[in-house]
Image (cartoon, rainbow, N blue to C red; front, side, top):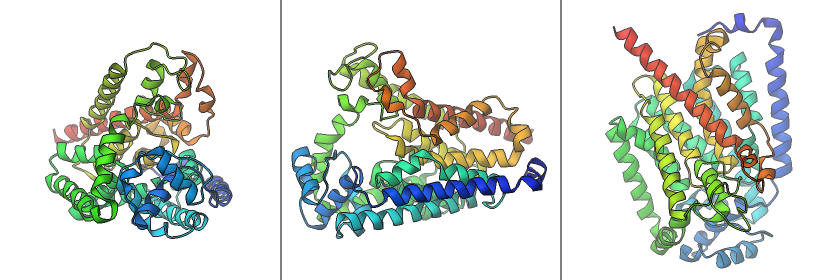
Length: 423
């Protein structure tokens, strides 16, 4: 470990503490203002869960007219888009019996508690002391992390997913098969994330974990059929999956993904996408999008290693983050799932110290990218800009790609160091 006292003199210790305190205050005020509000996102999950709890068939949930009629019936003065798997209802079942405002408040308290516990686990497995200078600056960053603010504002599920993935990482760090597989399976069931880490485990021949994750997914789907119904899955597969990420509205700059960028550049729609750079057939855009996303996943996974604890931390968190930018749809709150990768890179910073780290190529770019992810940026105002100005509308995507590129470079250096040590 680098000596923190030599990097940060004793008289400066009040600076990170004050910064952390101010960041905590800002996060608390934001939560106080937003938690009681009924917003989209929460409306969708609550309606899924309420319908399941009341015994209504979820096979009609993907009919926008029917779904939004239920949204209004349950007390929301807004519309939402039903595009998640039926099992997305499971996380919100414990609050779906409440009236929407109280459900929103209770859910938010549970969600923020999940964030706190997830951060505790990430500090533990990264070897960073929360009360140290590195830990305080990292905690400050987490408390001003714009994706987290959006997660609170819209009553989203990503703090729970973050906790589940942190638990899976802790289980994998200890080679605990069940402790890895159960939370990872739940991340797949609730939101579809966890798929890229699962691919990584299969590539690295972690067969027990991979098999148990797939088995648990199947068991939960079968066990919840009496609640969610078989027809709900049929409707999801037939009506939602083929169009997920392929609609003109899915090219809106709110979706900071590879697919979102390519849809925006190469699709024409008079309302949503009136200024494409070049118009391509929908099938061509889909092929390019899938190819680019698969290429990025392979780019990240091919360097990933799982032999040592630092490698497991870095590789699994990079796999999770790669799943965000390659998702068909991912708004800013999805980037909460970059937090484990930030911890993995912060652990390297803590290990080497600033003097060694800043000499590495790409470290400054990665640091700027982290700040871009954390910052509130008005990129949505560029939705109807013409090419090439519209390229500036994807800062979160570019930042995520830069961080993944740097993480892969770090994986390569660790591999070289391991080979050098073995000679």
